[in-house]
Figure 1 (spheres, rainbow, N blue to C red):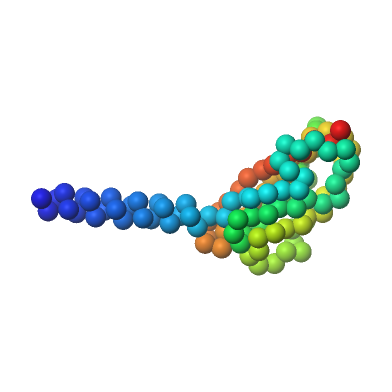
Figure 2 (figure 1 turned 90 degrees about the vertical axis):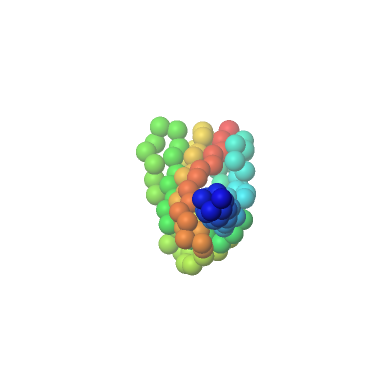
Length: 118
């Protein structure tokens, strides 16, 4: 009976730890242009909105056959929810934005979104 009680306590602790980690993350909530959007003009900036505070540490943009280029995130200091990042227009085609950051809870986060300019 004691072994079962200890196992139940350990199981409960693991569930609580996992649930806390899942709740604490700050995933990407929205982007402008929206993910998979088809737009008619190359934007001068992209907007990223997160569910919680995050510090962006790296962003890059890939367009068609071009190599990935780094995007400047140095103007943003600290942990915030909304970012406006200037981009270099490269004409028509698909743009893929990759981002990496650190959540206020200490978790590393990353993701990507894309849009097409026709």
